[in-house]
Amino acid sequence: MILVLRALGVGDLATAVPALRALRAAYPDQELALAAPAWLTPLADLIGGVDRLLATDGLGELARTGAPPQLAVNLHGRGPQSHRMLADLRPRRLLAFANPEAGHLDGPAWFAEEHEVDRWCRLLAWYGIPADRTDLALRRPAPGQMPVGVTIVHPGSKAPEKRWPAGRFAALARELAGRGHRVVVTGSAVERDLAARVAAAAGLPPKVVLAGRTDLGELAALVAHARLVVSGDTGIGHLATGYATPSVLIFG
Image 1: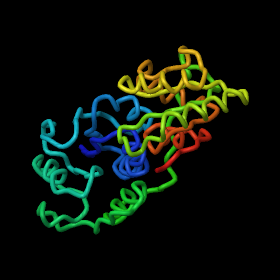
Image 2: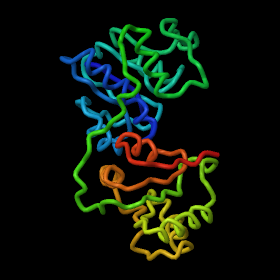
Image 3: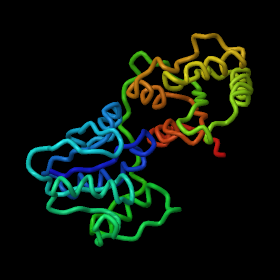
């Protein structure tokens, strides 16, 4: 078994897609298990090549998987805690960035300012596994119950410092609607109030607020068939990249 640790969020998993695909290609006959939060299962399915998701919330003890994995790959961070989590499973081999504090002297050096996609591709390349950094496309799901051709305004973010002011999102949503865009406002369940405020300030009806009403698979379908995505630097922007959906990401 190949065990990959990436116990973070949507955007984090999306930036690891080229590395996951490279591991799948390098070990076609091995089971590939991804240690990640259970709620990311729909995204893991859309990546393809992941045989099993081991529910893992952040850094802690990994569930035992029977026999030690043939290969453990740290796509989570630089260590030491993430290195130790994997080392505790006694894999035959650990692919990770060098971290003397974790007792792992193998692997390349960590560059703090490196783009996440490039970081994980470089890690695998150091171990002789080629990865294509442009291989970011996700499997396109059917729209199901999600509307098609809408413009998605996504004002929320887990990191408050990444949030553009709600009033500006509202002004933008109002302008887009005035130009003929069918605007919907998305977000998590805890962002529903924020989404409702943005929609109300933009003069949009409550029915356009989809925050808290979609699971991750439905959100992916919404993005895959959208006209445009406008968001901060957060996970939905990475979904837009995976589907080549036109997007505007607001940084800072």
